[in-house]
Image (tube, rainbow, N blue to C red; front, side, top):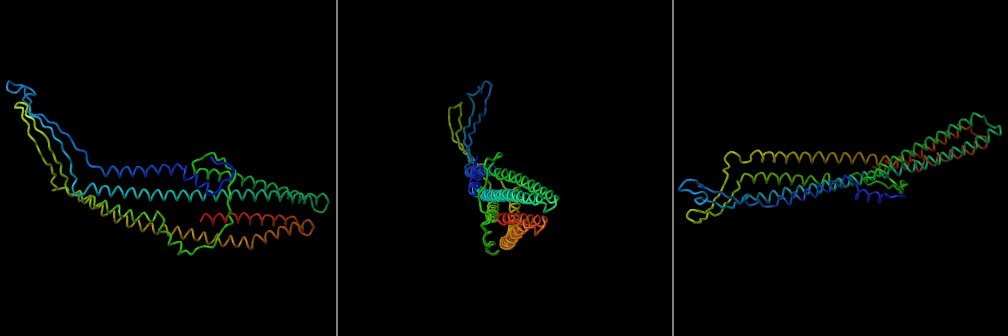
Length: 379
């Protein structure tokens, strides 16, 4: 379990190595590989033993008059059933690989979002601590002015309420930070995080690529790229179902033993089902319908991914614009107003309510800036 301060790359490494959900899915991939190996195996031969004419009369004395058969039989799969069955299993393994890639990216995204939320929560704790200190400083100034008889004692009470409010805000942000720590640690299967902080730069943002440029990248999304393999899998299943129309042949060969005359003879046989009633018509038709079904599901997935991209891009664009506006215009202005009102209050030019309003405006603007940056990085 990591301690101290962790980075995003550290969190991602821990998640990919220790996440129990991803680990369990990796076993599903291995199980699919085992199924492919099993599908490629030949049917086992069979050994048959049969004894006839065992009698208990004067002329037939037990096993001494028996006719015995020792035969081996082997099922021969015609129509390349084994090859087509193996192709189906191989494509099923490819599907599992796609799903594993999707799960892995989902885990990366989940871990990154959890890290961003933790980083934002940590920033808010630092912000709340800063404003709690400012409230204490303002309270000290108000107390001095009250003692000097320059303002009413009521303003000291108001300042005390403000200090208590900032202390409550600080405790709330600390609880949010603790919750976000646990959510981040849960991505690598931990319930008792030991790390004390996260390191990252929320303010590192960049101009956006165009929507069409991002749209071109969706073909790399495993949730979309997998559908070509899904169609190939359904087509391979159709070919496998068609191969079942061709009956298999069972070949038998062995030895016939006549105990009474102490003679031997070779025996040979063939067993062929007659495909009169069942030619796997239903299985073939079902496989055809499944191909059409997958083609429609591919369209649904394509629409879903493009819709999700559009939604995320809208959030990204809005967050970028808000962050730029807050950083360049709102935050400098709010800071200037607070500093001016604080200095003016010391000089007796402003009321305490003016200082309180400026302080709250600056705090809200800086908290909003952290939220907007977090939205940007999550999107």
